Image 1 (tube, rainbow, N blue to C red):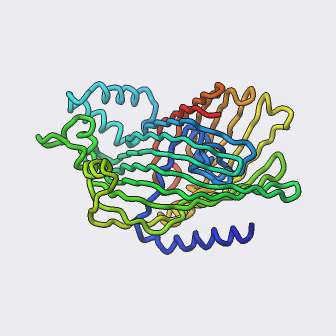
Image 2 (image 1 turned 90 degrees about the horizontal axis):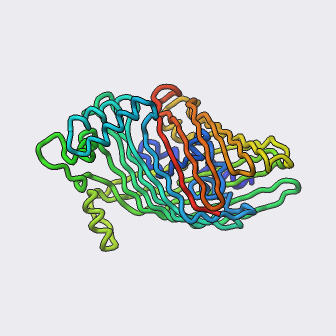
Image 3 (image 1 turned 60 degrees about the horizontal axis):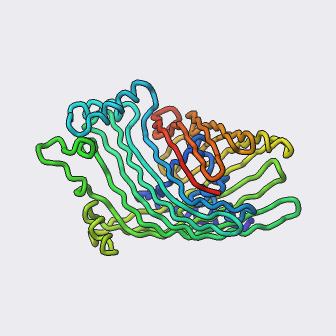
Length: 389
């Protein structure tokens, strides 16, 4: 364990030498269970979430097969006014550009606006982790619509990993790792692009063509490592280091060129664009205070995590941005679940229901986009529908 910690610390410090470069973060799903618990479900992840969380869960005694997990999310605060604004945006239907511009302006300048979705499948447990997870995320914000800007990202990743359990007297140590090849596309988007996507044209007379949006695209390879230690029936701790990789060289292209070349099984050969992959470190602890004999009726889990100190140091933000805390109460053997959390000082809420093979989870969350908690919150709604057993 000491040797593993030493290796992880060296990798983290090595990443610090790359701070001056553009960092390429993985496109992690905004899955409803994690977001409802304040984002605190990385180092202490389990099941399907371990494919983008802690690979140590691959060594779990119980295996979980997810035949399909679909998670859409939208960055919009679910207030009555925003719902009406969003409704007006949809009803614009590309015909009333004035209504679309007005609705977008309200959403972007108050909370920012964006959408995302993820889909995947996988097997986790009994020493093995196998999965395929794809997703996209778009978000734009600004003080004015025309001055707004943001990013859009897409990624498809395969996960192949193993987990090994070690019994240390009364304690159980699990160590895991995976190799994650991926196809990644990332680019920037501005307010006029968003108008064009929704209205079918830009601020000029020419028709808007989303195929002309510039993107950087390429293949990459990353390694993820993790460990968990069960300290009896009540407490466990975990450590996950994700995105261990070298610099990624992508090609500058457009959405249209990427789609055209993918049909031929290749990628565009544009000018190179270099990105740094800095390791993402998460340390967490889980508390399950309910006595074992009562857990079939009600089970409570509390998780606290410190996430991504590299990002905090790189961006010179408040240390409070490290902290994520979440709680989950499972009722009637997991049939129903209610969740709450604190994500960098912002409250999140959610619930779930597990009907044999069908699992449904929803969450309302807020993420901090500024340097200090309370500066610039981004609120969103996420839902997951999964078939798993």
